[in-house]
Length: 83
Image (cartoon, rainbow, N blue to C red; front, side, top):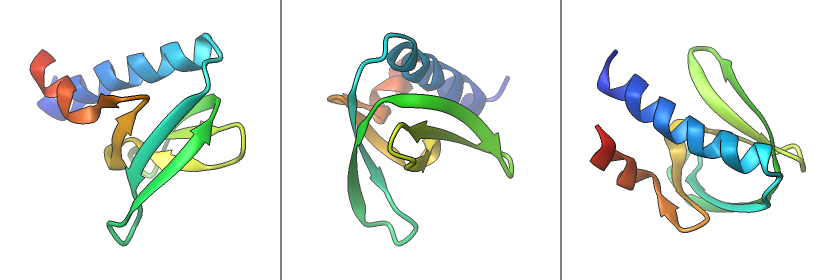
C-alpha cells in the first residue's frame, strides 16, 4: 500500500466517522484555482470518480479529498504523522 493510499484511508476513516455520527463539519479546501474555500454541512457520501476520492455534503457540495486542508480544526497535514 502506497503512502497516498494509507493517508487517504486514515483521512477517509475520520470523514466516515463524521458521516456516521451525523456530525456537522466545517471543511476548508482549495478549489481548482487553488483558492481557499469554506463549506459547512453533513457528510452524506464518500465516493470515487475518475480515480479521485470525494466527499459529498448534504447541501450538494462535492470536495476532492486531496484538496481538503482542514476538517473541524483537524489539519489534513496531521495525518502525515500516522504514515
